[in-house]
Image (cartoon, rainbow, N blue to C red; front, side, top):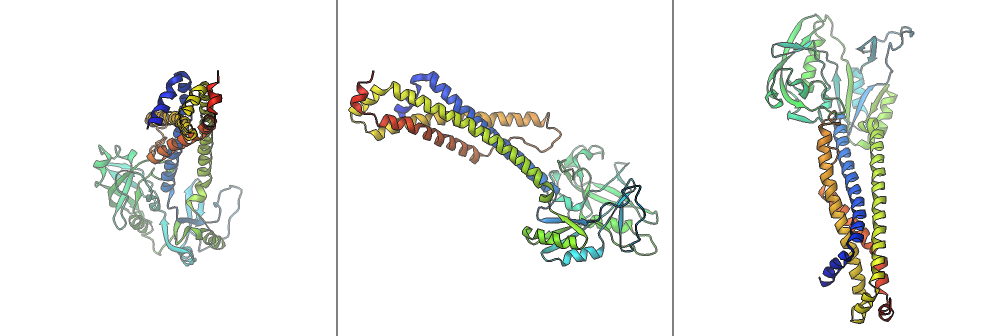
Length: 422
């Protein structure tokens, strides 16, 4: 304890030099904590966005044929009675999956479950005495949605989750008030007969970068009921047609062979990682570059510690000689100067990390209400206690290592020679 107290008091003998050295360490710790917090915040936002795109352990399967009727110069294609084209507007259509395709997917080794997605086109949504245009989201997108209130639409119930931006237009004062209320989804079948389907609002979704929460999302069972009515009213049964299917894999490592089997069957399956892997890699690369810059700043600060302590050893040569002449061992002299380096590192690290947490928290709130208001849910800086503690510990270790050279030089000084030093 005496050595530690002496080290702290010795550090402040040259306040200006020590202050500048602490400032250098402060800049490194501040930058490293801030970039680490930004990395955590962006990574968390990406993970939540990826979750909104779908289940990471599933393959999203569609027909591999390109869009049909895409070019006005293309001629007619041979008729295929098994094909089930799905129109998307502007003269463009694509081939949907058939019941036979679903069976093929189910029979592929490694596929645990297949959930087909019906193409449902409601006529309108009725609520608060008014009619609204309605395009339904895909039920398989429900997993991973961020909710303002309530829950996602439950399987087996006629429920749907509405976007937060729809709450006011549908006549509700708040998201919480909307949950549990009933609206009507009006469908028109092939015989041009409209029918209203009451639907309970199960939850209110928050907008995300993925864009999957822009439309009301029904439960799978409700979506299937709407589809059944949509294709009813015809003299002959209409062949089932699905815009896509989600194949749940037993193990994500089995994705490549399953994708090959799908390709051989004329279908294409892609994972969420296939679609967003490059996006995530670019963000990670940017964060790593920022962290490297922060580490360089920290190393520059450690050179300041070396310089400060070397000058201190030079100025206190006679004092070191006196201490050793009075019986202080070389190990204690080494400890004394090492503790001075650790104290400087501790000051710079704690103040720098604390300032970074405060500045990052303030910036996150300001940006969320300003420049980043269009990215709901994004908290740019997220600080984890363990990470901040690890940064402070790392800075202290670097400071200790930086102080070993001047501390060793002080410990090895000959007391007679040191006492003669002018």
